[in-house]
Length: 198
DNA sequence: CACCAGGCAAGTA
DNA sequence: TACTTGCATGGT
Image (cartoon, rainbow, N blue to C red; front, top):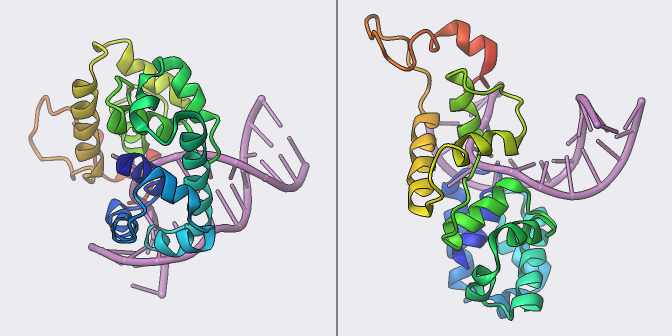
């Protein structure tokens, strides 16, 4: 439940801010489907304020919780019992849940073998010339799912490593680093060409 | 002070 | 269909 909520709150937002928002919800005793469904939107917005876009996210949380309460009795276990492809479509039908959020819920909250593609994944694949920067989500996802066994623990770690590498700036190319996978990619030229300025 | 973080939906042409 | 814009706090 908490992980699913976090998946929505972290949309385009630093995780540290999400932690504060989740702490607020915990402290208010709202990390529960029934109570979250009952709380007033204005109050929910105030609680998730630290995660940014708080009005939008309050609405998105409500949409998810309403679906969970209505169709699964507020039980995440019941949600996880649904067959994977259908469940993904179900999540995508919820307001505020796009591909990344749906896959994050499936993998991190439900433990189902879905590969999560995020900005870091895209950046790393792009830097290594493995995909066009503007390639569609499903295409990037297919690169992994077509070449790895469908194992949740593996996908979890794989994504964690992509995030770790993706967070790093492209190092100024080490003077001598033959065979380095980042060879020829780092430095000003690459920065100007195909990378957000961070 | 400038920039941006593990997106998404809605509006416009 | 393809682009653009709104949403908003907190850290570096």
